[in-house]
Every structure is written in structure tokens, then in C-alpha cells.
Image (cartoon, rainbow, N blue to C red; front, side, top):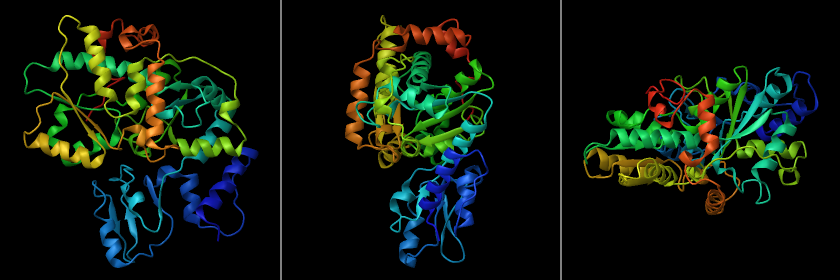
Length: 412
């Protein structure tokens, strides 16, 4: 019988070579086929075969999920509870048998590119720098996506700029006493999920901002109402976030860096050899979102620009990885934290440490730092492209972001 990977590679080649319905050959697991063709029907994490672990090892599996998404069937096999799973990757890392994998959305995306009569846009996460080699610039990567059939590629760092402005104005408006604080970052679905499931009494301290991913999808669909959107990044938790009811309008599909790399290899596209196609102009602030402390640094720098007369002190503390985030929330609940801006990142190092990064965390961090340092503009308030985009979206001034009731807002 074909392994999951063999079936996936066969169907990947079929969808790239023909417009006919996908028909795998030989002996294969029907469940594997349904997962690949209809990932929306499944949980964000898939079990590939029956569990062969001892009962003792199985018992420990249920303890690794902070969201109560693991159960067992009558045969002792791990079951992923779709409604609770946020794709934190803990069970995948823990599985000794390597029997669990994150959801794979490549085939529906390629089918969409093949059949859609409307434009499909790629939205690339800020952590993309150096992922496909140091020679792959944003312009070359945009060309590579266009060769696959995408109408264009948008850097999500550009929408991170807008959200940085929004959070800076919210912080300026919110802070009245030393006891006030905001829980951010809006960009990490694991941090938000951890607060909502285990510390729900703290939800009122979360700024009601979408993630840069959701904001980017909504911007594209505002400007091109018929468009479809595909986010690409190092995180499988984004697949779960994109299906959340209050933001499910924004993103149609989520791929990981690994998934899009599989496609590039299958069609012999080397992004490093593509011609340049430069469009986006994110500031240093937006580009920092990919690493831990990046959001708080971006907001502080923007506060200093919009309120130079006041120099509002942003006393930030960061949760770096799930263990650190849980400890940080515990301290907040017990009154041990005096910070007024608390930023949590579920992966160690931030998005650069995501489970589907193609390179090691430190190399990815260095790439993001370099890319941020190369930015023409230091903050979004200095960035004319951000201001122009906001005008196109109907925001006359940066302050009017506080009056936004939909586009960049989440309803927790």
C-alpha cells in the first residue's frame, strides 16, 4: 500500500500535469485520499495510521496538548478533536512513531489556481526571508508565485505596518494608570488561543485586532472583491486560525513554506533564478513581526513617532514559546507582572521558529534582522505606501483606524 507521502507526491504531479479529476493508482488508504482532497473536512492535525505505542506512551500523548484536543478511540489510537485543535504542533513533535502530521492544503490550492476564473493572491509571511536561500529576494519570489498562476504576491509585513499603527494609537488611548495593560500580539494564534481557552478572564485585555494575515486577506478582498487569498508561512496553526468564524472571510487557504517548496520543486521553479518584480514597501517595524519582541519594538518606535512630545513608556514583557507564555499568563493572573504591554509568541524565537520553517531559527532570525535593517522607512507613519493604502481603504488619517468597526477588528 502507498504511504501517505507517496500518494501525496503522485497526486501533486497529476494536478500539475492535467486538468482531469485526480485518480490515484494502485493500493492506497481512502482516508489519506480524503485528507488530501478535502482537508477542510479534517482536523488541523492528521493521524496517518493506527498507533503502535505502548499504553504507557499513549497515556503521555494526552498530556502534551494545552487545548484538550487529544482523545483515544476504543482501540487506543489517538484521536484529534477538530473543534479544539489549534495546530500547536506539540503532539506532532511528541509522537515517537512520527504518526501525526499537520494538515496539507496543496492540492486544493493548485486546483484553485487551475480552475479559478478570479485572481488568486499569495500572501507571504514576514518570516519568508532566507527561507528559499539568501539569493531569493521578495521580487524574485513574487515572480515565482506568478509562474505558478498567482495574480500577485503581497508581503504581509505591509499589513503588519497598518496594525502597528492601530495598536500604537490603541495603546496611547488605553493607558491611563500603571495598572492598565494590553495583551498582544495579535499575530500569534497560539497565544490568542491560550488566553481564550485557559485565561478567558483576561480576554478583555486583548486589543480587538486581527492578525496581519487576516488583515491582508481582507485588504485584498476589499480592493478586489472576487479575489481568492492564500497565506504562506512557517506555521500550521494559521490553518486553524483562518477557519475561526469571526475572520473566516479573509483567507481561503493556508500553506506552509514546506508545502510551497514542494510545489516549486515539482514544477522546477527555482525562485533564486527568477527575475525581479518589486512592489511592496513595508517599513522596518512591519518586517520585525517575524521574531520575538518584534511587535513590541515596532509599537514603541511608532509611539515615539506619533507622540514625540509625550514619549509614552511601553514596558514590555515577552512570552517566548508555549512554556514561557503559560508562565507569563500565570504571573499576570497572580498579579506578579507590572508590564503594560505583554507580547506572546507560541514558537520559541517567534515566527522564525515555526514548525514549518525550512531553515534553523537563528538563520531565519538573522535574515529577518537584515531585511528589517534594509527597510527605507523605520515606522509605518513614515511609510507613504502605508498611508496611500489606508486612503484606498477609506481611512483618511492614521487615527481613524480607531474608528474601524470591521476590517482590522476581531470579535472575541
